[in-house]
Image (cartoon, rainbow, N blue to C red; front, top):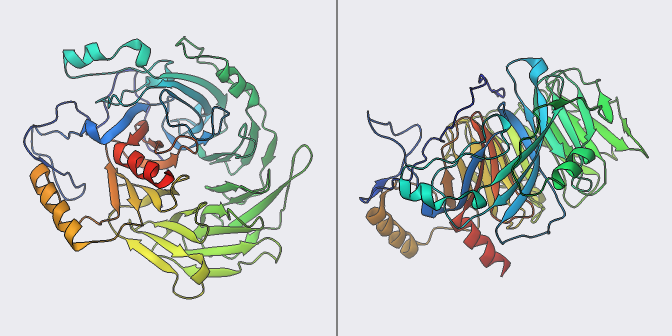
Length: 465
């Protein structure tokens, strides 16, 4: 699949995300369908601010193909604003020598305002700009409620294909570079510095720090994108490349031993990897050869099971950590599927959706609700699905009637589709925040979005009750 972001760096300027406007029409709106509808001259996309508990954009300079949320010690489950989040992201710069890893903290995230326009912190500015289409809204936004971005930059050789923070020791991160090297980093000093930065905006230097990685592995025969930390064994890692090989990393007292004898079984690029959430020696892989494989590191270098999962490249997978028998996969043809691993040798397909018409770039199960899944696609949409929902004729008729009054909505929307987020170009990756229910962060060619859909918040709260 096409992975790279081909975007040149933009000059510092305030920029609105597409489909973002505070002017919500009084007449029934028409639901926009990418790939189906076109904009007439003078028309613009608008979004309903009532649909979000929070929506804001930011960036760290260059576009980022991959990022990860860094777990913190501010509370395991946080539902009250204001919020603070930590993250790491890897750039796709115009020149290889300009790349870096961004270690960031965003604080003073105040929701329930349903702020109409996601502003951007262009080029890693420490505070986030805001635009509004009315003087009244300009007056309503004061500096005390603006989110604040603090950013540290660490030089990285080449573009960052993927970055992952370890669950058990979040300051330890692994990166896959387009140079063909996998590197492990200790970012504790940078995270500690960010933790002490407080909730006050200040001008931080734009210096890119030279920081030595803890471990560099260069024996992959090609670059790659697949990498995952074990949620059960601290420090255990797998990395997969475009040359069909997967390598196992085992932690030592102060480093890692990487098995140079790879796991081999796919006939094309290894696209993604996921450790089992319940069995320490089991992991899954997906490939451009259209299959998903299950591996046991105790039984040799060949997969235990391989299944034909899609009719094109399988780009991404997500193993459900709350319902460990379920695994989701996203395909280059825009479809995504859910399989029951208990039936993997037989007919394991639980659900299959063809809503998206362009490659699926990311899938991830909610860490708080076992039936909820988020999906991003190259069609510029981020969708959220609840697989526990089924069609009920009476409820469906009532819903359709309500939609006809409120909006000109398509008739064939799947009942499991909870939410559609638009406004980002060329979406690449998304993550739920593991400690803030209903918060999703996404990266695209034009920057990041933080969003908290209002109906997802309600769904998760009811499930937790």
